[in-house]
Length: 231
Image 1 (cartoon, helix red, strand yellow):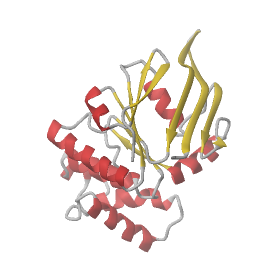
Image 2: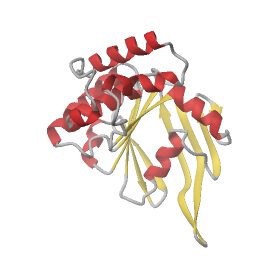
Image 3: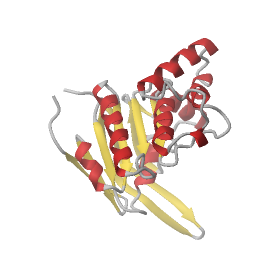
Image 4: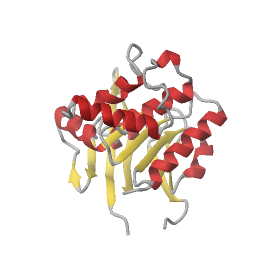
């Protein structure tokens, strides 16, 4: 039996838009287990980006509770949330979000600076991770010298820099052709087999075939469905 890693209970999130209040999430209950592969799907405006921000400790709910490793994080300060993110969660984005004027190696080393790792340890770990994603021959290349698929692999290596428990990916294949997208998905499957909890946020229903759990979100409400039993 796997332990519950992330638990949302009756979570609401409201935003002020001028004189109106937008109810982005409306009492969401959701559980994500350790080493689970979860795909969150929904159309634009469904609330999936809001849900991602809450699961990723980028925001706190208007109401309800969010627990990470059994600890209530619903009312933590921005600084405490940032510390938690740095240790527990690695992010992969659709647009890669690499820093353009530094190399692949330096991009991967960057998150480790904020965790106080020495330069030697940062260098060793970054080389190891870029080798893991198949880019050992691209260490000194800058993002504009890399293909889209290579940039996304650098972004995945960067997400792994502090050995997080959770990899949270927002439309990670959205800017890639189908063949390159499949290679990226194979890489995420490898991470999952190595013990990572992987959470995808996407509008692409094709990606649900990789999931152990599919969370469908529409109009701020979720429907959770286990796709297959895990070993």
